[in-house]
Image 1 (tube, rainbow, N blue to C red):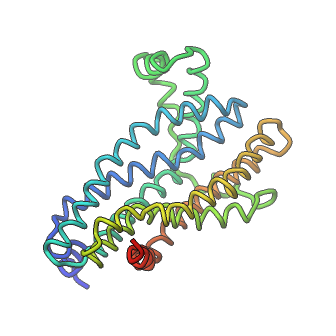
Image 2: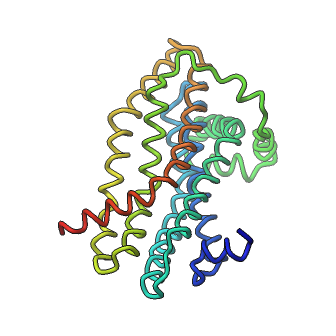
Length: 280
């Protein structure tokens, strides 16, 4: 397949590639910062200040979550154009999901750097006690900028070689793959279904929770509780720090695998949503 054929398949011959790259970039940014939550957990356990780590991550992730308001309407627009101009947007949405995978991969590669960054944020938040104090001490002071620069850690093979499976709940890692496969396609599959069945387009776009609920169930009842136990045991030093680090790294990697798996599940999920629409 040459470049022109590839572009025609991805864009359907109707959508500007620049528009798709914009959606790709926005969803990549969102997933990149979401993935760094695992680095925040490592930093929280290492410093024994998990609540501060979660709070600092929430502040950092707020900016990335605003990207959702940019790319979700854009995804809806692609589906609307496909219905109006009668082309198949399936490959366009696959390209968008690749953006989620790219962002997750970036978060995985720079996990060591963000671990140091969150440790710095936790330390400054404890000293200043407020958000503006953290911002001023890191971004507006020479010493803060120097400390920020020291957080930089390029991706190194040595970091991944230290990962050990011993003590890591393997079922949690596998379930995390399934979790992110469903969470990734949940907001997108209904728009593919809308293109497949334009007569019920409005109905299917409201059926995202039908898929997302599977991922949410796995998160709330199976994956998150196991992760919370690991964090508490790590803080109390009941398990080695290496087990906590290995668990978080493997959870990050499993998130990437789940995101890639969603590429294969997108079309079946769209058919499932289209089927559900028959009952409304």
